Image 1 (tube, rainbow, N blue to C red):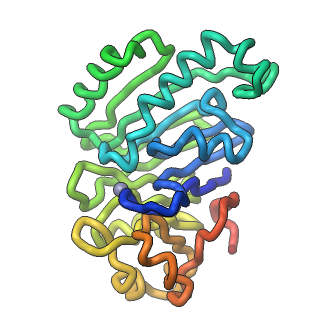
Image 2 (spheres, protein in one colour):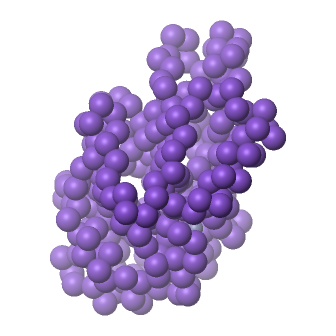
Amino acid sequence: MKIMPLGLSDSLSGRGWGFPSFLLESDGRYILVDCPADIIQRLNGIGLNPLDISHVLITHHHDDHTAGLISFLTAQKYLRLFFDTYASIGSVREGQVVHDLSVHYCGGDLRWYNHFKESLVIHHLSDVPLSLSIVMDGVSQLNLLDNSVTVDLRPTKHSAKCKALRFNDSIGISADTSFDPELIEWLNKAGIIFHECGMGGPHTKITELDTLPKDILDKVNIYHMPDIFIKAWHECPPLVALSELRWYEGGKDF
Ligand SMILES: [Zn+2]
Protein backbone atom coordinates (compact mmCIF):
# COMPACT_ATOMS: atom_id res chain seq x y z
CA MET A 1 0.00 0.00 0.00
CA LYS A 2 1.09 3.55 -0.65
CA ILE A 3 0.53 6.90 1.00
CA MET A 4 0.60 10.45 -0.30
CA PRO A 5 0.50 13.45 2.03
CA LEU A 6 -1.94 15.93 0.50
CA GLY A 7 -0.88 18.87 2.65
CA LEU A 8 1.96 20.03 4.85
CA SER A 9 0.65 23.00 6.72
CA ASP A 10 -1.12 23.63 9.99
CA SER A 11 -4.52 25.21 10.36
CA LEU A 12 -3.34 28.83 10.22
CA SER A 13 -1.15 28.54 7.15
CA GLY A 14 -1.59 31.10 4.41
CA ARG A 15 0.76 29.49 1.90
CA GLY A 16 -1.68 27.25 0.08
CA TRP A 17 0.51 24.18 0.54
CA GLY A 18 -2.39 22.12 1.77
CA PHE A 19 -3.88 21.47 5.14
CA PRO A 20 -3.15 18.15 6.84
CA SER A 21 -4.61 15.14 5.06
CA PHE A 22 -3.35 11.91 3.49
CA LEU A 23 -4.39 9.63 0.68
CA LEU A 24 -3.73 5.89 0.90
CA GLU A 25 -3.95 3.65 -2.13
CA SER A 26 -4.41 -0.09 -2.07
CA ASP A 27 -5.10 -2.04 -5.27
CA GLY A 28 -6.55 1.01 -7.00
CA ARG A 29 -8.85 1.95 -4.14
CA TYR A 30 -8.41 4.99 -1.95
CA ILE A 31 -8.69 5.88 1.71
CA LEU A 32 -8.66 9.52 2.73
CA VAL A 33 -7.32 10.52 6.13
CA ASP A 34 -8.92 13.78 7.25
CA CYS A 35 -10.91 16.14 5.10
CA PRO A 36 -9.72 19.77 5.30
CA ALA A 37 -11.20 22.71 3.45
CA ASP A 38 -9.01 22.30 0.36
CA ILE A 39 -9.63 18.58 -0.12
CA ILE A 40 -11.40 18.67 -3.48
CA GLN A 41 -8.68 20.86 -5.01
CA ARG A 42 -5.98 18.56 -3.61
CA LEU A 43 -7.68 15.49 -5.11
CA ASN A 44 -8.20 17.24 -8.44
CA GLY A 45 -4.53 18.21 -8.41
CA ILE A 46 -3.56 14.54 -8.70
CA GLY A 47 -6.27 13.59 -11.18
CA LEU A 48 -8.78 12.19 -8.69
CA ASN A 49 -12.19 13.31 -7.53
CA PRO A 50 -14.40 12.57 -4.51
CA LEU A 51 -16.00 9.53 -6.15
CA ASP A 52 -12.61 7.79 -6.12
CA ILE A 53 -12.66 7.61 -2.33
CA SER A 54 -13.99 4.50 -0.57
CA HIS A 55 -13.27 5.44 3.04
CA VAL A 56 -12.70 8.67 4.91
CA LEU A 57 -11.04 8.44 8.31
CA ILE A 58 -11.30 11.50 10.53
CA THR A 59 -8.58 11.58 13.20
CA HIS A 60 -10.34 14.28 15.26
CA HIS A 61 -12.89 17.00 14.84
CA HIS A 62 -10.75 20.16 14.64
CA ASP A 63 -11.52 22.40 11.71
CA ASP A 64 -8.21 21.91 9.87
CA HIS A 65 -9.14 18.21 9.59
CA THR A 66 -12.88 18.40 8.96
CA ALA A 67 -13.73 21.74 7.31
CA GLY A 68 -14.03 20.06 3.90
CA LEU A 69 -16.37 17.27 4.96
CA ILE A 70 -19.62 19.02 4.04
CA SER A 71 -18.19 20.11 0.67
CA PHE A 72 -16.85 16.60 0.06
CA LEU A 73 -20.22 15.00 0.84
CA THR A 74 -22.06 17.62 -1.22
CA ALA A 75 -19.79 16.70 -4.13
CA GLN A 76 -20.54 13.02 -3.49
CA LYS A 77 -24.26 13.75 -3.70
CA TYR A 78 -24.26 15.80 -6.89
CA LEU A 79 -21.52 13.93 -8.75
CA ARG A 80 -23.57 10.75 -8.23
CA LEU A 81 -26.91 12.36 -9.12
CA PHE A 82 -25.67 14.02 -12.31
CA PHE A 83 -22.75 11.77 -13.17
CA ASP A 84 -23.13 12.00 -16.95
CA THR A 85 -23.32 15.79 -16.89
CA TYR A 86 -20.23 16.05 -14.70
CA ALA A 87 -18.42 13.50 -16.87
CA SER A 88 -19.10 15.68 -19.90
CA ILE A 89 -17.31 18.61 -18.30
CA GLY A 90 -14.47 16.59 -16.80
CA SER A 91 -15.38 16.76 -13.11
CA VAL A 92 -15.45 12.95 -13.09
CA ARG A 93 -13.97 10.48 -15.55
CA GLU A 94 -16.15 8.81 -18.18
CA GLY A 95 -16.95 5.30 -16.92
CA GLN A 96 -15.10 5.60 -13.63
CA VAL A 97 -16.16 3.17 -10.94
CA VAL A 98 -18.26 4.85 -8.24
CA HIS A 99 -17.40 3.30 -4.89
CA ASP A 100 -19.50 2.86 -1.78
CA LEU A 101 -18.46 5.46 0.76
CA SER A 102 -17.81 5.03 4.47
CA VAL A 103 -16.86 7.82 6.86
CA HIS A 104 -15.28 6.73 10.13
CA TYR A 105 -14.97 9.45 12.72
CA CYS A 106 -12.09 8.13 14.84
CA GLY A 107 -11.92 10.91 17.42
CA GLY A 108 -14.66 9.39 19.56
CA ASP A 109 -16.30 12.61 20.78
CA LEU A 110 -19.98 11.63 20.76
CA ARG A 111 -21.19 15.23 21.08
CA TRP A 112 -19.35 16.29 17.91
CA TYR A 113 -20.50 13.17 16.08
CA ASN A 114 -24.15 13.86 16.87
CA HIS A 115 -23.71 17.49 15.86
CA PHE A 116 -22.16 16.38 12.57
CA LYS A 117 -25.07 14.02 11.87
CA GLU A 118 -27.49 16.92 12.46
CA SER A 119 -25.47 19.11 10.11
CA LEU A 120 -25.97 16.53 7.33
CA VAL A 121 -29.70 17.12 7.61
CA ILE A 122 -29.27 20.91 7.64
CA HIS A 123 -27.14 20.68 4.48
CA HIS A 124 -29.63 18.35 2.76
CA LEU A 125 -27.10 15.54 2.74
CA SER A 126 -29.01 12.86 4.61
CA ASP A 127 -29.69 11.13 1.28
CA VAL A 128 -26.00 10.69 0.39
CA PRO A 129 -25.36 6.92 0.22
CA LEU A 130 -23.00 6.79 3.12
CA SER A 131 -22.02 4.51 5.94
CA LEU A 132 -21.21 6.79 8.87
CA SER A 133 -19.66 5.53 12.08
CA ILE A 134 -17.91 6.72 15.20
CA VAL A 135 -14.90 4.90 16.62
CA MET A 136 -15.35 5.01 20.37
CA ASP A 137 -12.62 4.66 22.96
CA GLY A 138 -11.61 1.06 23.35
CA VAL A 139 -11.96 0.27 19.66
CA SER A 140 -8.43 -0.30 18.47
CA GLN A 141 -8.76 -1.70 14.96
CA LEU A 142 -10.71 -1.23 11.74
CA ASN A 143 -10.68 -3.54 8.74
CA LEU A 144 -11.26 -1.83 5.41
CA LEU A 145 -11.39 -2.69 1.70
CA ASP A 146 -12.51 -6.31 2.09
CA ASN A 147 -10.12 -6.79 5.01
CA SER A 148 -7.09 -6.03 2.84
CA VAL A 149 -6.29 -3.00 5.00
CA THR A 150 -6.02 -3.19 8.77
CA VAL A 151 -5.99 0.10 10.63
CA ASP A 152 -4.76 0.11 14.22
CA LEU A 153 -5.84 3.11 16.26
CA ARG A 154 -4.33 4.66 19.37
CA PRO A 155 -5.48 7.74 21.32
CA THR A 156 -3.09 10.69 21.18
CA LYS A 157 -2.42 13.52 23.63
CA HIS A 158 -4.28 16.40 22.03
CA SER A 159 -6.73 19.10 23.04
CA ALA A 160 -9.54 17.21 21.27
CA LYS A 161 -10.07 13.47 21.35
CA CYS A 162 -7.86 12.19 18.56
CA LYS A 163 -6.41 8.91 17.33
CA ALA A 164 -3.17 8.00 15.60
CA LEU A 165 -3.40 5.47 12.79
CA ARG A 166 -1.21 2.60 11.65
CA PHE A 167 -2.00 0.93 8.32
CA ASN A 168 -1.09 -2.75 7.82
CA ASP A 169 1.76 -2.23 10.29
CA SER A 170 3.61 -0.49 7.48
CA ILE A 171 2.54 3.17 7.51
CA GLY A 172 2.04 5.27 10.65
CA ILE A 173 0.36 8.65 11.06
CA SER A 174 0.65 10.39 14.42
CA ALA A 175 -2.36 12.69 13.94
CA ASP A 176 -2.33 15.73 16.22
CA THR A 177 -0.52 15.13 19.48
CA SER A 178 1.86 16.60 21.98
CA PHE A 179 5.18 14.78 22.21
CA ASP A 180 4.49 11.22 23.30
CA PRO A 181 7.41 8.78 23.17
CA GLU A 182 5.07 5.84 23.83
CA LEU A 183 2.97 6.79 20.82
CA ILE A 184 6.11 7.05 18.69
CA GLU A 185 7.20 3.61 19.86
CA TRP A 186 3.76 2.33 18.76
CA LEU A 187 4.17 4.06 15.39
CA ASN A 188 7.67 2.63 15.06
CA LYS A 189 6.22 -0.77 14.13
CA ALA A 190 5.63 0.84 10.73
CA GLY A 191 8.35 1.29 8.11
CA ILE A 192 7.47 4.93 7.53
CA ILE A 193 6.05 7.44 9.98
CA PHE A 194 4.32 10.76 9.36
CA HIS A 195 4.46 12.86 12.50
CA GLU A 196 2.87 16.20 13.18
CA CYS A 197 5.10 19.07 14.21
CA GLY A 198 4.13 22.42 15.69
CA MET A 199 4.94 24.94 18.33
CA GLY A 200 4.39 22.77 21.40
CA GLY A 201 1.30 22.78 23.61
CA PRO A 202 -1.00 20.13 22.16
CA HIS A 203 1.51 19.70 19.31
CA THR A 204 5.03 18.27 19.09
CA LYS A 205 8.06 20.53 18.88
CA ILE A 206 10.76 19.74 16.36
CA THR A 207 13.30 19.87 19.19
CA GLU A 208 11.37 17.08 20.90
CA LEU A 209 11.37 14.93 17.77
CA ASP A 210 15.07 15.57 17.46
CA THR A 211 15.65 13.68 20.73
CA LEU A 212 14.47 10.41 19.16
CA PRO A 213 16.95 7.66 18.30
CA LYS A 214 18.36 7.88 14.80
CA ASP A 215 16.74 4.64 13.64
CA ILE A 216 13.32 6.14 14.37
CA LEU A 217 14.15 9.60 13.04
CA ASP A 218 15.21 8.05 9.75
CA LYS A 219 11.60 6.93 9.26
CA VAL A 220 9.96 10.18 10.31
CA ASN A 221 8.44 12.72 7.93
CA ILE A 222 6.92 15.76 9.54
CA TYR A 223 3.71 17.53 8.56
CA HIS A 224 1.18 19.94 10.08
CA MET A 225 3.85 22.63 10.24
CA PRO A 226 3.42 26.35 10.92
CA ASP A 227 4.52 28.50 7.98
CA ILE A 228 7.50 29.78 9.93
CA PHE A 229 8.97 26.26 9.95
CA ILE A 230 8.91 25.74 6.26
CA LYS A 231 11.60 28.32 5.55
CA ALA A 232 14.10 26.67 7.81
CA TRP A 233 13.17 23.11 8.42
CA HIS A 234 15.45 21.62 5.77
CA GLU A 235 18.13 22.53 8.25
CA CYS A 236 16.76 19.91 10.61
CA PRO A 237 18.12 16.59 9.35
CA PRO A 238 17.51 13.70 9.50
CA LEU A 239 13.83 14.61 9.22
CA VAL A 240 12.73 14.28 5.64
CA ALA A 241 11.08 17.18 3.84
CA LEU A 242 7.70 16.59 2.30
CA SER A 243 8.53 19.19 -0.26
CA GLU A 244 6.20 17.98 -2.97
CA LEU A 245 3.26 15.65 -3.48
CA ARG A 246 4.62 12.14 -3.90
CA TRP A 247 3.73 8.58 -3.07
CA TYR A 248 5.55 6.76 -0.28
CA GLU A 249 5.37 3.02 0.27
CA GLY A 250 5.15 1.55 3.73
CA GLY A 251 8.21 -0.38 4.81
CA LYS A 252 10.32 0.81 1.91
CA ASP A 253 13.61 2.49 2.71
CA PHE A 254 13.57 6.09 1.58
ZN1 LIG B 1 -4.59 19.96 13.31
